[in-house]
Length: 179
Image 1 (cartoon, rainbow, N blue to C red):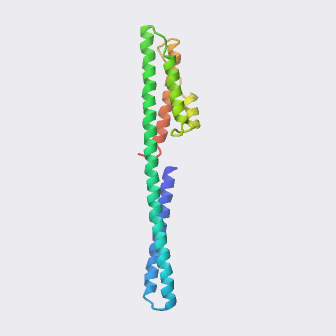
Image 2: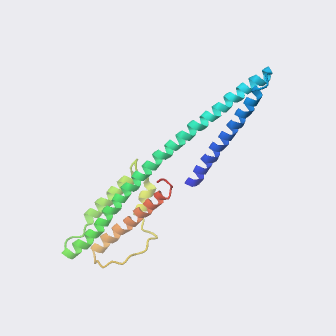
């Protein structure tokens, strides 16, 4: 969808420039005629062509400035989600460490991490409730094998599902040609 929008912007800009240059060249050729009617017509054509040209240039600059801001925002979002992925992987590693040491499963850490991610996703700078719902949904993900017993395997699976969803979200944001 992004590439279609950029192609349309390019086509519209190109058409406006071509029309402006045609009007300018016609107006200049009419200027050669000293007839009062053609002189007035050429003045209007020159003014109109310059107006279209100016609006096209300003619009193109504004469009690309907006695109740059959007790209920076998406990049910052991807980086923050990557941090969450690393934190989720640390929780998975913590499950393995604690199971070997006979300590309690990191339920609290996993829930705090999940709450932080959902809070970020639903915040004004986040992606919205639809992405928070996607983050929470494990449907369609293959069930993995684990060597951990309960309750560690439950926390590990809980974190793995959410890490996988975050990875998919980061991948989808990267596909928007915003690098």
